[in-house]
Length: 348
Image (cartoon, rainbow, N blue to C red; front, side):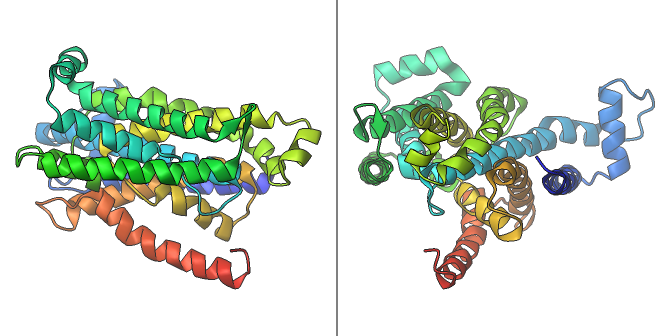
């Protein structure tokens, strides 16, 4: 990693830190930066003097910080997965949703919500708070595995077949979700809407702990594959000649992306455009080198989703705007601009 890349990543980290501080301080209960530091210092034993109100500490520790941390984790997971999948497919329009991750998670979550059979009731008894999240993650893994198997022959995975299989499975899953939504009762419809629109309103330390390993592992491993992804951009045959185990790398990237996106959808529903747009922004601003794009997408994705969540819970306060709507409203124009720009450069 050269000096320029390190400086850019450091600047992105500073942007993320600024967004985290703003998101922690702004809300129905106002907290200054000094009070924020005082609460954290007292809770961690650094300071003994409390320069804040008990209400501020309760709001910060029990409501606001878990939500900020959750948005950072999910944003990082979606961003880095999108960058890795685009590098793997060598296609700037690719994202994890194309291989069925989001569709599988949503389908299984809706199944648990609508079909209250004895088996699903037993799942609720075993998994408790995590029942729907567990089902969503299992659905993401299962659907991705089916898509992967459909596109693999003689140990080789064809990217074109993988994309086409993903499109077909996504359409099938969307059809079942529509059918289940039609069958749902009035009491079940709000829960289904949660998955469709995306929300961080259910954030707690419990959800943060539940999602943490599924995000940390991809964020820690994927940057080490950036150099191999750069080589893969030359083609499978060239990458093989240069010593890259292409088959193994494809499997690892698909598994890690499924982990991050499946877990994110499991706790927050569908939040679109983060994984699609963030890598493009980095390529347009800096470079297409995956050694910057992969880790940069994690940091910028975290900052963007934390900022979007801050806007979602403040611009229509005391109500709250579903974050999936906000990311779509922001991401669609940006994505359209990218398409036009890339087309004018004859890259599409």
